[in-house]
Structures are given as C-alpha cells and as structure tokens.
Length: 114
Length: 112
Image 1 (spheres, rainbow over the protein chains, first blue to last red):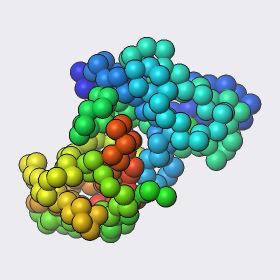
Image 2: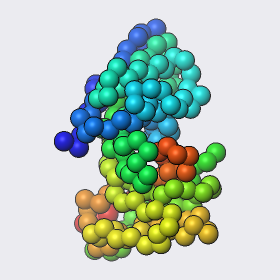
Image 3: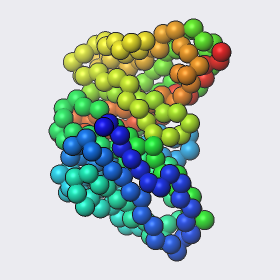
Image 4: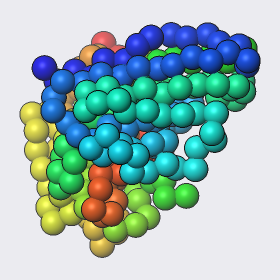
C-alpha cells in the first residue's frame, strides 16, 4: 500500500467554524508533512512531524493546529480561518532521515473559506 | 525565499515531441527531485537525483544535475497526451531532515 489518504476531498467553511483535515498512511513512514498550495503556485511546507513529534513549524499562524495522534495519522485542525487561507492542503509522508528518499503525497483537500 | 525557479512557465507541444524543462535553485542540496501534478491534485514522485550524480534515466525521463550552476533539467521523450500536467522540481535541503522546497513549476500541455 503506497497510498496517502486525505479526507475530506473538498471543504467549505465559514470564518467562525472549526474543522479538521485528516491524513492517513500505512507505509510505516515516520515522517509526515502538511503543505499548502495556492492556485498556480508551488506547494509550501507548513509542518513536519517526525516520530509523532512536531519537528518543523514554518511560522504558520496559530489558527492552523497540527496533531499526530499515532504513526499513521496526521490531522490539521482549523479555527477562525480567513478567506486567504483558501487553498489545496496536501499531506505527505516519507521515511525519516531517509537520505535521498521520495515523499508520497495524498490527493489533497481543497479548502474554501467563506 | 529559497524557492527555485523553473522555466519555461508553460510549454505546449505535440504528441511525440520531446519536452525539456529547467530548474534553478539557490542553496546547497542533498538531492533534487521532480514531481508531477495533474489538475491541482496530489503530487506524484517521478525521479530523484543525488547531489553527487550528474544524470539519471527512468523510462522516458532523463534528468541532469549541475551543482556548480545550481541547475537541473527534466527531459520527457516521445511525449503523450497523458503527460499533460504541471511539473515541479523540489530540492531536499541538506538539513539532516527531508525538507522539500518546490520550484515554481512548468505547466506542460501535450496535444494529440
């Protein structure tokens, strides 16, 4: 199984809502990532988890709150988002310290904040 | 920004032709990877070239890397309509941890 599964595929939320994005992989990867991609732009790294611990936070606003409850799951909790947060949110996983290893990406959640 | 640049931004060719896209980056790297993205969905890994390698092949793909010029190129030979997608280079910064920094991307259109 080389899949990274993200749910939901699409999400529309109001600025006062609280929602969560979910990501799951069963490849035994111990590094998991959240990326944000705006239209016609490249993905930008948000967070990296290694062995279920937050290793990198790329100065992401606190209205985005990541969580890694176990080695297979990664969540991104959303609260009080702004319309400019509308984007494609991509989850990825890889081996840790793989030294020349690829990342496996999910199909993304397309988020619209209204 | 550490982001790399890719050119061209868009490329339109006919089936059977070759497509070449270039990537330039700014910092020393552990490796450089190329990914494909169809219609704004997930990215698919195509090929990885290590910093001590100069050229690599995978099927119809050929990648070169010139670390002295901080540049790489991706050649797709005998292109097909199914190759229509956006292509991104991504540098893995040598930070002891995989931290991909993506280039600006090339949108490839292959017409039948």
